[in-house]
Length: 236
Ligand SMILES: [Zn+2]
Image (tube, rainbow, N blue to C red; front, side, top):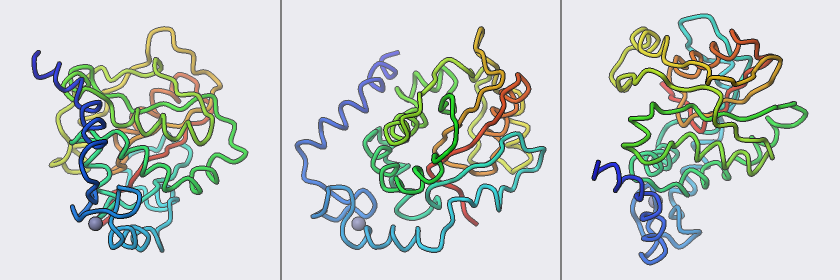
């Protein structure tokens, strides 16, 4: 419990620290002279990682091994190099502003995706309550709030719950991941999703098994459209 209490304060503590410490590049650790997030070299590197990468990759190269329940989606950056550093700083070091920063760097892609799309709400992929308590925050929620700041979509919190505390997926094969999350989500008691349109948000799209499992719950309960917007997509 003591650890959980400390973790609750971790994001706030990290933000406080960043006010007083010199700014180091979040990716390579060099002293940063720019906006305090990236050194000049990594700034250029991120641009080159993004050049030639299509956020519509989720539609083109989805890799799902099962029926797809979401309609379409985008992933803002390849999960690689500098973009991966942003996600790691958010997820493992509790730098919530790192999540906001990576989202704002893809503002143009988000605005393009949101244009003329009627959306009833944006939903972060939930963590199981035990994992949420241990980490102190949900990284997908940080990203969802940042996306909502750009699109004016409403962040909905009580729609889907993660009812099964699934094991870590990092060392699982695509088939194992699918099995691992198959029944992980349930609809929040009393949530109304019929005929509604949602955008699901997560930090990384790997095999898509997790977000597809969540989309399935929404579609089976009558949701009209389910879109996916992730900060990154795992690349081969
Ligand atoms: Zn750097």
